[in-house]
Image (cartoon, rainbow, N blue to C red):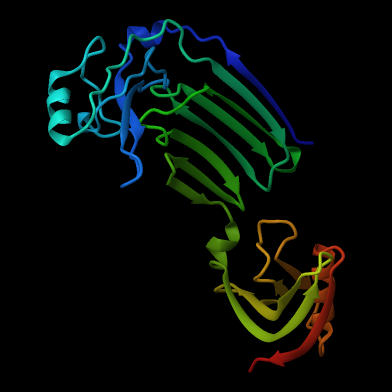
Length: 298
């Protein structure tokens, strides 16, 4: 089950924004040399609200994200002097702030999650007044709640105050603001037997040709590899797997361009090619794959 519920345009009073003075900042676009000049206007640093008549300021008034200290009811004399000296046209100032602020939206998503348990929240009160929280319980599912102002274009658009706690693969982690604060390894095997070390050895490669239902033909690369999983103390576990990859197909588009299968035991001869070819045909419905000879690696 995966469901998304979203409620938009929830009324939001502008009294708090007005009480804080709206903290005007400079917004705009840098422009392209030789085609379009840079543009500047004014917006609210908290909610992205713009004055009634956001204005057309001189690019010399400041950089995007800087506080705006000019006037709202008439042109700035210094801006006009610099604009005339640099050859810019006369620009119009912004108008007054609107009475109503931007509306708020609320979204709730219920969907399956991966392995492990995760919980966290995001807090960004000054800019978009965003508050988000999530709880993931592995195979039992997850729930995400997110509320924010509908428009978010303040200078701190990407600076969230994020705090999350996760328990994945027997590791308890505490993250904050996109960085790892603390991590605790709760796997007793790492403390007694030592950490896991994996050695991958490529045993053989092969090529194949795939003819897709739309008539295209692409080359496939098949690879047989062995993985030796060992610890400082204890026995070594050996695994075999076969990978197939089609460089002409993007791995994040349909149909997929790569895949991997795990073999139950050490393959003999070219049997792994048949397994990899079958996996590629299952991922590429309607494709006809013709394998070629394999090349063993020393």
